[in-house]
Length: 261
Image (tube, rainbow, N blue to C red; front, side):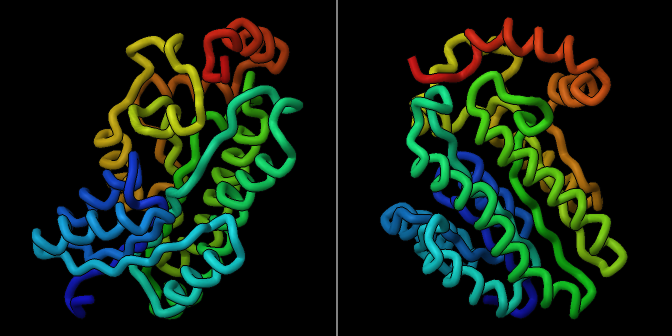
């Protein structure tokens, strides 16, 4: 890594929002540490970035495992300027239809890995008085999920965790931001076998917009980033609408929200 360029570590770096983070961070002058399970995609991404002059380190790891987390924790202990906890997943189907093992696997990636990697990154950031952590959450965490109860709960945790850490570490020069996108055009929904055909066109965001807004808000020192005026309105309403009304709205929407058909 170049001594004159900042270093960003991105998890889930080879697809969707993660790949867009990699592209935009390289354009902003960062050297990169790429984390993902797919070694072929990691190698391809590294070749592309290196051709453009970016220094790249690849770390294949499964963040659902202790071994995978430990490998990335060690690298974070060496110090980075920015950690992007982007890796995440969802499960299709009603809660009782999904195996307990699948739900626990999701929590290991969506919650435990975020906790462990953030915990590993913060000591060196606090010691030098600067650093940034961006945790990719979701607007799904602002209200009970009409489907995907565990997913919504995991993202509620990520958002609260990030905002809480921001309060603790901003005085030490470290910014922690929760990025909460809505529906974004990536591979996420197809990988999770989710039918999103009922989602209206205006509710979709591009990965480019989500990542740009998230990085802009992170560098502006904001604890929360919600891309898109439509989702800013959703989040604002979720915080003031009475719970009974909210439940009724969610029930009416449930048939049109992502789920396994």
